[in-house]
Amino acid sequence: MSKTVLITGASRGLGAQIAVQFSKLGYNDVVNYFHSQDLAEQVVAKIGSDHAVAIQADVRNRQEVDRMIQQALDKFGSIDTVVNNALVGFKFDPVAQQEFADLTWDDYQAQLDGTLKGAFNVIQSALPTMKKQHSGQIVSIGTNLYQNPVVAYHQYTTAKAALIGFSRNLAVELGQYGITVNVVSGGLLKMTDASAVTTPEVFKMIQDSTPLRKVTTPEDVAKTVAFLGSDAGSGLTGQNVTVDGGLTMN
Image 1 (cartoon, rainbow, N blue to C red):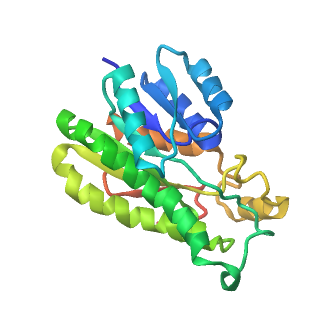
Image 2 (cartoon, rainbow, N blue to C red):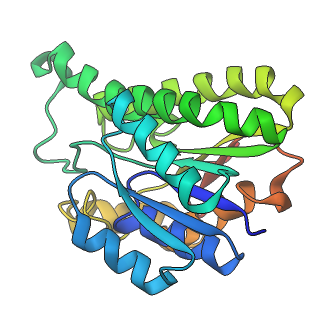
Image 3 (cartoon, one colour):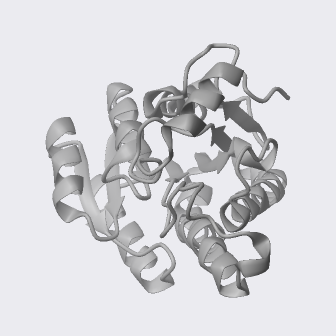
């Protein structure tokens, strides 16, 4: 029986590319979306409706997440991989980004809810199934900005940094059930909706500072996510793998 991956925020950009990469590995895809039903259905059509389904849910809402998990199980019978990719209400705009003194705690809370609470809800809801299977892969999308804040996207970077600690604690606890937990931290991606407002100057600065002399693409990151989220990455857990062309080095 084919394995199944659930990807949050998969209607476009990085999430859609992750879905495509998993389909190439023979996985069934659960394409989660919040508002963009038409785009999510386009991803399903590209993969094929026999092996993909679009399901609406706000990852910040536990009832909606529980409903999504049950719909996924009813459709495909298992959830073998979870990819926490959803990004709620943030744009990589260095001009519009507020300085710390002008931010409110609500600005931080919005990103913590979208990133950390969203991952918390999805993982906790899918966990009984993974424990029963005694196997599973969890991959969450981070950022290299926690290590090298080229632009001080305070609230976004703080939430993503918290995701690493969250994931490593899970890796320690869930390893006994055959479940791996990792983070893939991409560089600024060219191009997604979130980075569409990024100035050419910032892209050029990153390109010139990167050993590969290129800006990271969604496909670059998606390939690593698919590796860690499949049996090929079964020997890795508790890791934060950075995909940014060597801009930051661990």
